[in-house]
Every structure is written in C-alpha cells, then in structure tokens.
Length: 182
Image 1: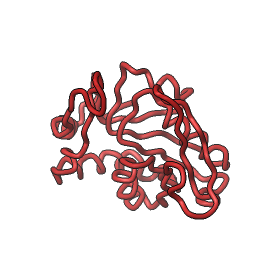
Image 2: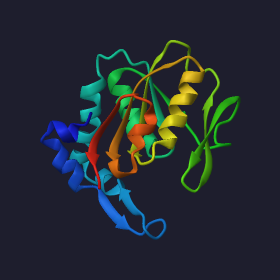
Image 3: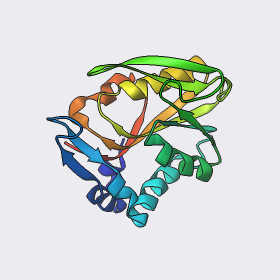
C-alpha cells in the first residue's frame, strides 16, 4: 500500500523535495537524498503527518527506527501516536546489553542492534526507515523485534525503489510508502 497510489495531494510536494544524486556513493547508484526534504518545513511536516494519520489509533506501542534516517522520521511519529521510540543501531553504538541481527547486503554483511528489554513480548511495533531498496535492512529489523516477542504491524518508508523488489522479501508483512522512485 502507498500514499502515492492513494493520490494524496501532499505527495507531489514531498516527492518534489527529494533530490536524486547520480553516481553516489558509487557509480551506477541513483541516491535518493532526503536532506532536501528536511529543508522544507511543510514537506517534512506533511511526511510525518501522513504516517501519523495512518498509525494513530492503531494501538502501536513501539516505533523502531533504523539508523540513521529512521531516527529522523521515527521519533516525531512515535510522539504523535503515543508510542515509545526504539533505535535500531549499527554495531557497537549502544551501551549495555544488546540483541543483534546480522543480514546480507548486495555488497556484504551488516548488523542491527537493539537494547535488551527495550521491547517487551506482545508489544505492537512499527518499523520506520527512509527507504526500502532490496529489503534486507527491514527484514533484519523485523527479525530483531519478532525475536523478542513483538508483533510487527507494518513497515513504513518514505521512498520505495520498486525495481529492486524489496517488498517481496518482507514475506507478506505490510509495507506503507509515500513515494516510489524508478
């Protein structure tokens, strides 16, 4: 599901503020730069508002944001829907005891970590990131949350690169995106 397909009038304003940077960080990559979206207070607010409108009243108790850009969108969503924010971080960034989930990337392996005890069994979680490409990071985030007994309600991303088929890797878990980029 996507707001893009729902034709919400705010989507055009959001999409027009996302800059595409060719050949960054390496040749052949068309980098979707959300920093230009953040420079426009209306577009940034519209982005957060669209997610809040979708998730308010859905009994979500955890918003899990993926490092780093999930940290931009996750906290304001969590505050508005009355949920806690749980950061999912790269290795060795969180003090104390953590639970880890390794995952495959197109170019190697990576890992996400979460504090032990940050999420309790039975909590309803939303996973937030800026973009879904191949889906590896979102899958790792969902696995991490489900391993501690959370129910992942949905994943939410500002941008989807549908040509990379990341949605297919989510094993039927709902994904909500605002814009698609081809």
